[in-house]
Amino acid sequence: MPVTLSQNSEADALLDRDPLALLIGMVLDQQIPLEKAFSSPLELTKRLGHELDVRELADYDSDALAAIFAQRPALHRFPTSMAGRVQGLARVLVADYDGDVNQLWAGVADGEELLARITALPGFGGQKAAIYLALLGKQRGIRPTGWREAAGEFGEDGVYLSVADIVDADSLLRVRDHKQQQKAAAKTDARTTVTSTAT
Image (cartoon, rainbow, N blue to C red; front, side, top):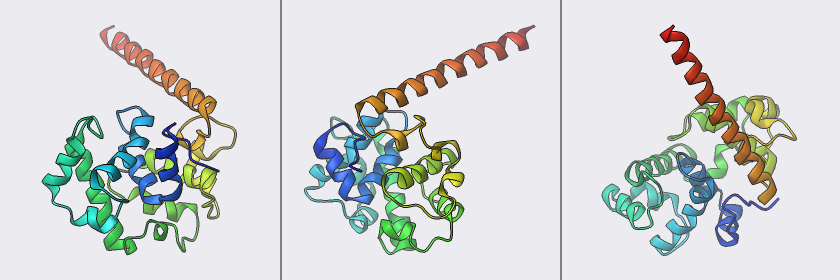
């Protein structure tokens, strides 16, 4: 299944063929529109002048990499901190997985083990790790035993909760609508809490 997360054919083609690009997109998918997050790996390749190289990113001068992220238009709302996260991710991949993203899921016993490996990566909290696990299972065919259960609600079939469920423009709108409903509910809960505390 072709990746359609950036809604840009060139950027999506990179995500489709390069698991490192997809992983970096996941790291960047925070506090910016998801299309921007998943199109930034392509822009990074253009600024570097070649395809992504995990060892190069790991060894890159930190200030120089931050400057690349900060070039206008910046690759993220917080370019310096995100450049650091991407570099930290690259360093872990080199140290623990011989610089090969595919080794992240190679030989795992089950979904829980893969989830633990993902959660240990820089830039991945529990929820983001579960979403990435669901994305691997639903769209990349990486399905160790129990992957749906390990991904929790994000692993369920027929839902529109996260990037794992985006396969076209319509599903993107459904996921975006779900996120907006979540934000509205969170605001309502916050107001209710403030009101009950005041009384």
